[in-house]
Image 1 (tube, rainbow, N blue to C red):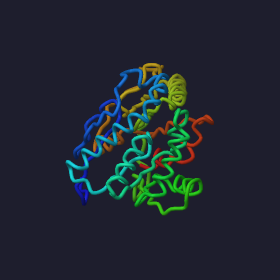
Image 2: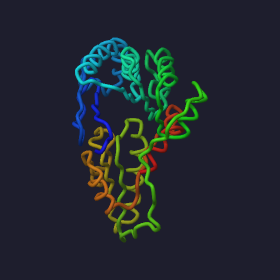
Image 3: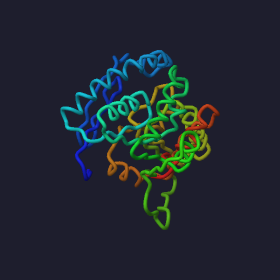
Image 4: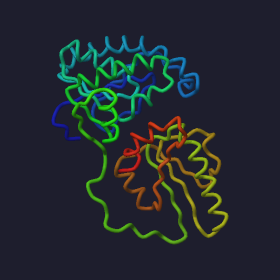
Length: 274
């Protein structure tokens, strides 16, 4: 809200993102969208287009830089192909480049047909960035070990202080709450939670149980007890604060299988702190 410099956000996803709560954001569609197929197992096929999409994105970013008088570029290493485009454009125009890493790139690119090539290029982004921002100290130290020892800045959305005492829980109520993106890999955890809450409800019929997910939407296959489940749209910080007035338990849905070990090791902080 009170950034010390003028900024512009650019989203390069095939599908348009919801409008941000503040500021200006451009959607630069660097490859065609394949609609619902983007959220299925067929999405792996479309990743082969990321190299081509990156070239298109670089051209469009160059236009934006010239039109808007951009003086620095900040990229988030998640999809990584778009990060590489931003890095190349910054280097071409001799602009300072800043890098944020929220998830381990090796995890974000797992199974990507261009993984090896992209990881090598993201290493260059890490090495040459003017500054690096990481979501956890564990992730920062791992990238220093894996790539090169560089200074990094720890940026989380954590609280600065904690209440001295927990809020009293009302009797005969069990309200479980989640806020954030509900990744498909969380679904086995979510199904287990619903079964557990249903079991508690059957054993304690006077207990009013509810599961509130402020996550926009979830797949129909992830719902097995709709009578206790309520899905809310994404909301503002004040709306979430209001939600918490009637919540007993905060839910952290993580996948615990080996395939997602890197997510749990280096991104755990973002799931726990706020």
